[in-house]
Amino acid sequence: MVLARCTACEHRDGNKPITVFIAWRDANFERHGVKTNLCASCFVSRIAPLDVERDPTERLTCPACHIDTENDYDAVYCNSFIPGYGRRDVEAPFCNACAAQFRIWAQASGMTLEDRGRAEDSPSSKVSPEEVLASLGIQVRGAA
Ligand SMILES: [Zn+2]
Ligand SMILES: [Zn+2]
Image 1 (cartoon, helix red, strand yellow):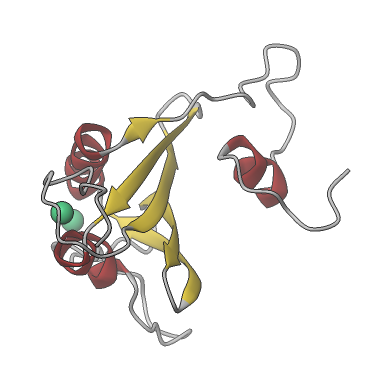
Image 2 (tube, protein in one colour; image 1 turned 30 degrees about the horizontal axis):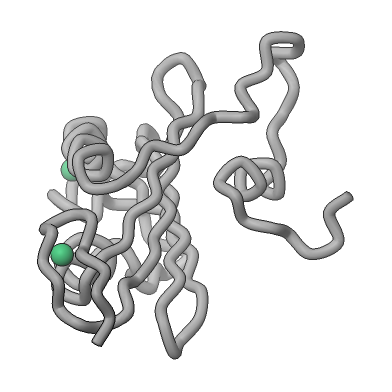
């Protein structure tokens, strides 16, 4: 029996939690990150619906309300570490309203991560995916 509680619903279901790092950028391009440890039911209701196969030719739609977000989406990134399965990465093209709701849920459901990458010196520099992961505390193979 695993004693950890789900950081979202606070239920203790006895299974190993699914760790999900959730990240996004706000209107000022500042990065935000949250670490959650979810029970299976929270994962299934919140994260799994974001993980859909997309036809490369089809237009993007919001995973929550399904409106067309091809030209204006508000991305939320989820890196999930599923016991016995491994890692799944998802980028969700939310509409603005649904992104805001999802972020509110994420912030209420996990631990806010310190944004070590918020550079004061070079606001124009591009941030690589490796830096994003490193800021979330995930070691990237081959990184210096
Ligand atoms: Zn839960
Ligand atoms: Zn939406």
